[in-house]
Image (cartoon, rainbow, N blue to C red; front, side):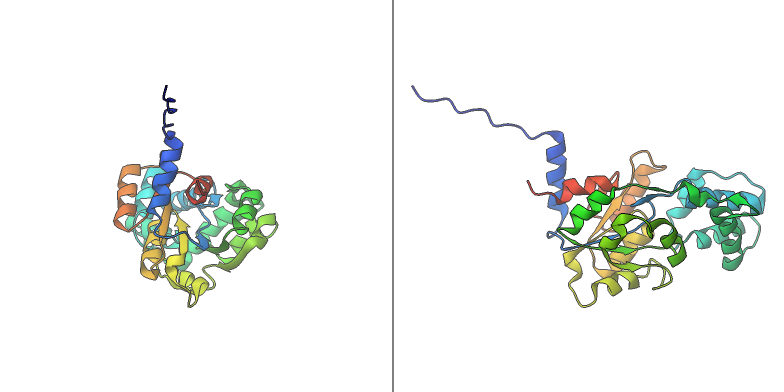
Length: 253
């Protein structure tokens, strides 16, 4: 009597999702480049809170995270100082970039003995995970932070040593200019890299540099559908709700 073959196991939803995401990658990346804010670090209580505090302080108007996301969805506003200057000006109080920076930093760093919002920073990925990625890929950072802001959070983090190159806003033109990505890659083929970011300016910089881009966008974010569609228009290969799910995209079956 012929032996019955065992039924083929159907892939789980997680397996199907992982395969779909991996299929979106044109080639297996050799180089991983990460944005910092919103990707490796939760900035809702730091940069975003400082932006809202600054706008309220300068205009007297209560503003919301929903409004902040509307501004963040516009090109050029990965830089919070630029965003605050434009936002306050739009509310009827003309403000220069430098004035926005000075006011913002009082809330971010703290002033007059009052602690700043920077104390609320939280790293979203473990040092062990970074170490594991470093064993398989070259790791780099391209951030809109200043070197001082970067050092405050990362100089004591044990995983910082695994990043080959760290480009801050002190080292290259601000996003959406692709200079930081180009400095990291040099003469190497941009298609061998993958840039992971969470902002429109990240997507624009990646497109200009010819680097495949993957967007981080939590499903509960304001205007998720609109932002997801915009990332798609700009060439994002896929969306992930958090950086820790990148492992599922990169892991072999």
